[in-house]
Length: 146
Image (cartoon, rainbow, N blue to C red; front, side):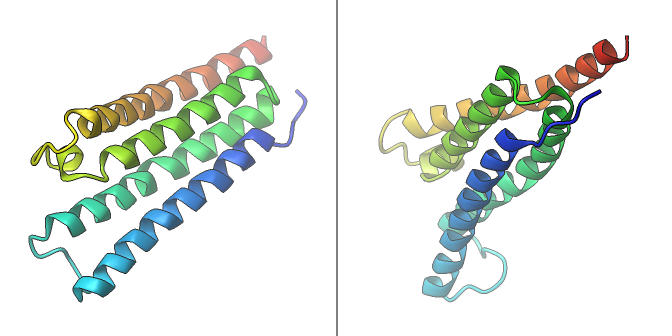
């Protein structure tokens, strides 16, 4: 079995850490302006920003690890490329959906259904890819072992 450098995963990792850092800065900046150091004390805007940052922190690391394993084994295939691109799209869609209370708390629907739909698309793609990736990895491992 040949091993390949996980180039596509590295690009995705660079993108995700940038996005995560921007989301963290959004929380920190808002905390500074509102003088709220810990918790959110019923502040929906702060709660939304904290969850938007927390959500990428929950999903991105394990996806990157498993994608890197898949890419190390399978190589820079179209499958790895599209998994990386679609996961980046999903995380941007989710963060965009969470950028409004209409998307995060499903209240104050300014902008119509755009924010809730973006959040739903981001969440659905994240979950679908997070289920597809391990199946693809195990299938590839099983096929390679035959």
